Length: 232
Image 1: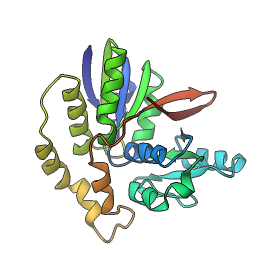
Image 2 (image 1 turned 180 degrees about the vertical axis):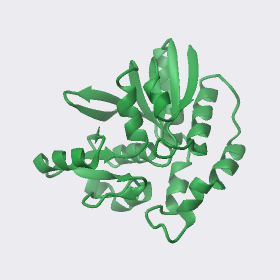
Image 3 (image 1 turned 120 degrees about the vertical axis):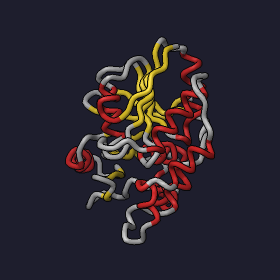
């Protein structure tokens, strides 16, 4: 099994084989949480306008997402796992959600054009994603760390890619070193700035917990839509 690592949108566009699209802060920490709270599926869209169009014909859809980290006016929630957790299963059970984010979602949409399979991932899904990959034994695995808004490499995504690679048997990994670099990075420190309430301080706590879920997420085309489903 050949394992490669890449970053940002170009990494997603060049993915081959099984593409693991990593967005720790926060899209693909939100997605498995949503499934654990009982959603049926998540539809991924490129723009807020695409999300509003889906909502227009499906009034019970829940819209979740951001543009450059800022919640979108008219959406039900921002791209925040703590907000999702606070809303709870009573709101999400049985629902379809629509996710629009500036990094992870865009990476999945790009990778679907070139990869054989696309698996959205984060720390919370690391071991389950690796277990799925090892069961498939693909010729090539592309680990893509999506970074901040497709513009800047983010340490949480790079370290998560390194962790998944380590679990696949390639390279070393030190979680204390990872946490030290992630937590004190400027991109994480915004979560502790009271002047930026759309970055709740609880979010890093939820996003940096490894191996919470025993399922894997798969992104697939469904007609003219792209949806994420939970798989074993």
